[in-house]
Amino acid sequence: MQYLNHPDLLIKLLAQLAQGMGTSLYIFFFTLLFSLPLGLAVALGRMSRHKWLSAPVAFYILIMRGTPLMLQLFTVYFFLPRLVGPIPRLESTLIAFSLNYAAYFAEIYRGGIMSIDRGQYEASQVLGFTRAQTFTQIILPQTMKRVLLPVSNEVITLVKDTSLATAIAVGELFLSAKNATSASGSVEPLFIAGLFYLAMNTVVTIFFNWLTHRMEYYRG
Amino acid sequence: MLEARNIAKSFGGETVLKDVSLNVPNGQVVAIIGRSGSGKSTLLRCLNHLETVDAGEIRIDGQPMVTTGKLGTPVYAPKEELRTLCLKMGFVFQNYNLFPHMTVLKNLCQAQVKVLKRTREEAEKRSRELLAKVGLADKADQYPCQLSGGQQQRVAIARALALDPEILCFDEPTSALDPQLTQEVLGVIRELAQEKRTMIVVTHEMRFAREVADYVVFMQDGLIKAEGSPDAVMGDQRTAELSAFMGLLGDE
Image (cartoon, rainbow over the protein chains, first blue to last red):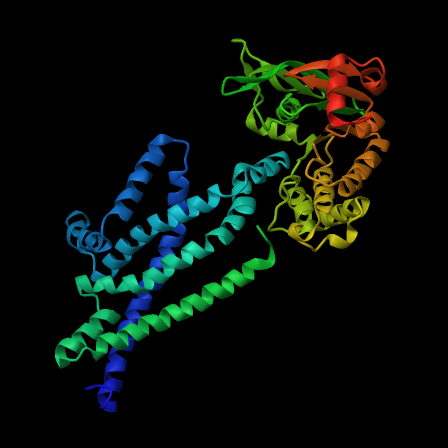
């Protein structure tokens, strides 16, 4: 009980972890910022009638979902710089995470879009909506509601996946805890970090519950 | 005025429409009757470009929607022209197909604003008039899921009317409804018929067809087997096939 018995050490630890959490949250928010819209583009590419577009996109999704995220992170951090020049750790993380999560979001969106009744397209057509209008005004809003639950799953996973950035020494929450453990020989920092992740995901869960509730204004 | 000539359509090798021609003059109500699988819904869907024809020609007010090209295959009008042309037709689906995420009012307004470029005020005014007409003035701010099937279908009719189509098409508009709700919807269609609106109604309601239609078309096996005034087609002189069909329904 090295930390719990020494409030001064505990406060110092909490400050370190809080700083690490700031970086974790940074990765979290920016990954979502990029991957949520990118996922939509990927979904549309995957659903394209043109094979030259849908086939490579399907391959991209296969790679992203079929190989470890940590390996993708290494690839971006160690190999991508050979092609484009140095990429800082944090940016490497954002690139790898965004590309990876976009693939998952794409498949979730695709499932949502495909679940919309054909009648909605037909009604849109007879009312004279263009294909773009049909998608943005009729299909997409309904898809949003249907994908909320699976998307929340991914978002919760992302909170925990930010810890993978430890592998390329990004100073996020998990690395802060690991360093504290190494320095002190106590595992307490790791468990306290666990509570930090739990706290973040509690907030995420509450947020999605609220969003789900807000979407309940219609059935369907 | 709508003219369809020699329409043919098959799905995956199964011929649903063999060779169907139909004229719908302005101000007339045409009822299309026949058993399930006779091709009547497919015909209506072809007229609204919800299906593409394999052969044949369709003209609305003389303007070609689809004609026969040099190679004998059907050639549709260019995309934008087709969209404008199809706007002359309104369509009411069997299962309503309202937009569940929009209020009733927005269901009616959206296309007026986005497609016909009416102002929101104009669109709302027109929508409220139409909702009053179908007896649902008080439901403007509700969502479709809060309405009964009959009410949803009346909203769907109002939504189609909101774009001021020249011809209104109904694809078995009461098939999903119980007898009481059916009467609500038929009441609205009856009223539209009295206003001399041009309509094509695919229906199983024989009595209704006989009462409201100016012209009845009986289809079987992808062909029109009988057509003419309701009395001529459905009266005592009716064909054996139609008698058999009407007997199946237990009607009359």
